[in-house]
Length: 244
Image (cartoon, rainbow, N blue to C red; front, side, top):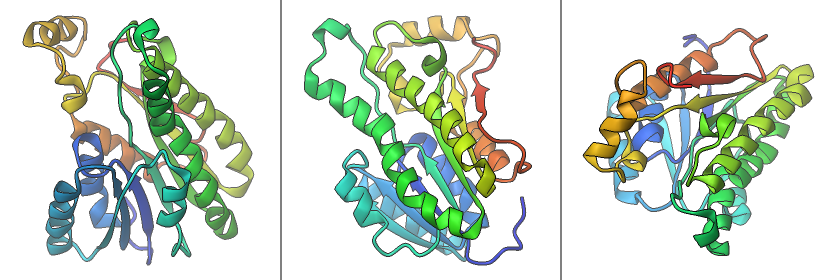
């Protein structure tokens, strides 16, 4: 990855745990400033920032709040004068019958997983267009491609992210801004630890790679997209061990 440019600034949502934490650690050597967002895990985020600022010449700025709230996202961008990359990673799941889902639960999933991608992208784009460069990477899911039973809201939100990615890439390609997504399969994070060992074993039996993916593998894919040729845009990169 190219390390020669100065003042590279990245925004990462859902940065404190799991995939977001792995992405943040992987990106730290290549950026001068990181805007790191989480909603609840403030202690974990601050601990991560302390670790990164000791190991790398990077400045990390934490933001604690709901990325699905447009007012909060506006606060994140309040002092921004440049943004080189946005990693839209924040996400929540909901497992259960759609008929049992409350309106509040539906809106929470859609706001966090889909609306937040609009909020961050809308505010970042003018800075990228001005400099005729930038990367937007959305962390999506294979269920956005195929749908998952008992995860209708999650599947709908990630399907929206995939279409958002393809459409925005076409819109921004003339400005040399790349927009791509990573459709993750079953990744070994807290989101999938709601399953029992037996359920996890059954899932793994259906994965040709014979294991769950790791957060670090998602982070490596993010690094690949950050350094990918300019002609690579509008793509939904599937990372699922051959599952689908």
